[in-house]
Image 1 (cartoon, rainbow, N blue to C red):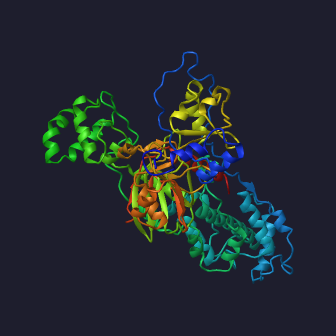
Image 2: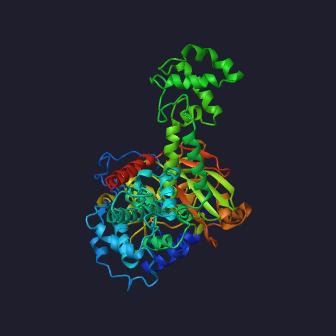
Image 3: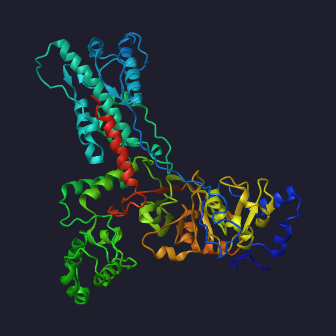
Length: 628
């Protein structure tokens, strides 16, 4: 028995030759193809296209193959916040009398007559709210014509609790101005009874609207992430707004209800504690531009700050080696070549590669992150956590892209943490969550159309047979395998009517296994033959999927088995195994995130997504600011 790829006994070569012979009738070929390849791949998964063999371009074919068609990835959008609408209180004023309320559960109280009289004070009230909140106000008060927040001639205890919670919004990373309500002065009023009643009913409507805004923001976030970019993919988290008002009308536990709208997980709480600590702390004495990028010979006013920090923290060994150099060049804004070994030594001491290039990771290791930057990162992280389920689940897999790590967490314990490679800035990994379903051993790689068009097609136009030589299989739209050399690749642009699949082998882009959680982004976790990537500090290097340094460990974790079992499975060629437990996976993006001991760590904004989220938040605040 021989095997393909020099890794494991996969398929007898004779059998492969017989079953994939190009002369096999169409129906039979398709059936055998499905049998051999496990029914195919349900999605067009992304992977990583290894560099093709070196070749000489034919002089009679243009370098671009005669076409420039490309398939683009998702884009970022200019965020459009919900416009506020004027609440049409005329509909409420025309609502039926409480003798026959629309809501059968409504029970008139002693204040219901006063409420009915007060409604007239809304006739010329110019109050603006989000469309869904405006609709909920009219629907609720039409069916329940009574005060929630007013008793007698002033705000009640329920209202006082609500206003206090809204005033504490900043402790959750929210903007208090979004929930401001003008509270009627308590005690004796100089206004006439009618004027006082008008003041109270307007306060009633304003507080209900802002409470609903707060509940929505706490549960779902202030922005809709899916409207920011195609890289974000989150299901809606609808809030029953009429139901919320009913609950608030029948409870004295207003604070408990509103606080329960926030995510109820330890990570959210740890970020809140960090935010409070940051707001009470002093700013760093020396603040260095976190985006500094400086190479030998270049100049920057930020360099003396870094050199000062290095000089402060010299130990005996490095002080003896570099003390004189730092004393002489410590105020220089020019990155003198003499400083190169100093920077390299500092980088290596911090666990970095030590290439001498001063970048964000070097700055962070020396100067830390500024207080202002940390606060922004924590506020962004709190907003992003509101997009996820309140209970993150256990067990779960958590991939944090800016940290370049993937973890398996069970019962509050991080059972596995492995280095990860994520998508390049031009092939970004999406931010979403899903559920792990399957592990594939010695997988076939279905090359996505974007890689076929953008990376393979230019080569194929001048060298149509190279896929045959490089271990790839080409099939037409009916599933029939055909030689790559038989296709006129020059006839196609962005729409290729062929599928390309790479056979299992040591050179396979997915390595020895992949872990699937089918999603529209066609992203999954997998092994890779490019092990050296894991030694780099900045690991945004793939086409979008998540490569793992310890894929066997992760496969064993999600399957609830041992690494030895995984090793045994790999000895028997291509196969798949379903994950029988519910294991959510978060392909997340957090530049501030607590470790398992609740210590918040900070990471570089690899894709500049924090900036884009801050722009969306600013657009939302600007849209809300003219509200009354």
